[in-house]
Length: 287
Image 1 (cartoon, rainbow, N blue to C red):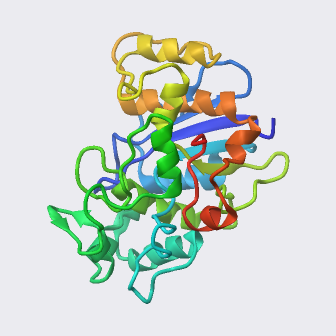
Image 2 (tube, rainbow, N blue to C red):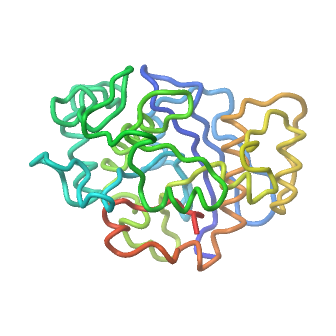
Image 3 (cartoon, rainbow, N blue to C red):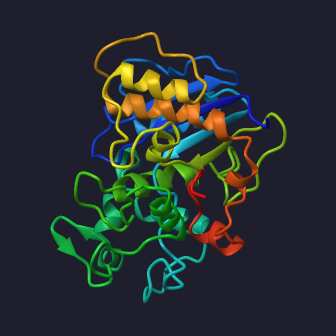
């Protein structure tokens, strides 16, 4: 086992500084129950960045529940027709950071309002002429998510309760700022022994792996959570009654990362080429 700790972060792209939708969970190798990091704390995105960069234990595999990139392979570009369209995921993160520098709290509203970029997004009841219609454009890994029983949304979609586009764009600012401090798989090589790494996660994959039915992956009580944890070989969380699903998502997915991180096929998904890895990235566990 390359890693000794496993963290899962339920993310939020909402406006403002602090978010009830962010939860950070951590567990160690073995079978001890996962625990919340700073229970009761309302995290900011800047605080999560600081935790990832300098505070999480060495040897941590940390999963961020967001899309690390945008579709590229379907049209050979992130933003077809825009001369500033970058060629790699890291260049995309840098573009988002540069354009969104005026936005506080690692937000990404300036990108969405950008004259060229906005043409590719669905937002505020408006669909850009390059959005593509229907459900929008998808990455190759999102097609793999669907085959695994999930219901992914395009990262170019910024409206609706299930949209992940805002989370993804704000997350790209975090990934950009982690450069040189924590590698992001599969854009970066994995670290040597004792090093940490960040991966993209989809919490529904963890829930399905733990025996939840597709479409019923949210856990609303500690009893449901502990039943799912048991399926992953984890000790139960010592609590009862209702639980916020952001918290249950983080706790369960941390235990799932511990359960599956040693599996070679999770690090070498058959559909992931080197070009896909460097442009669109991949969701850990979508095989």
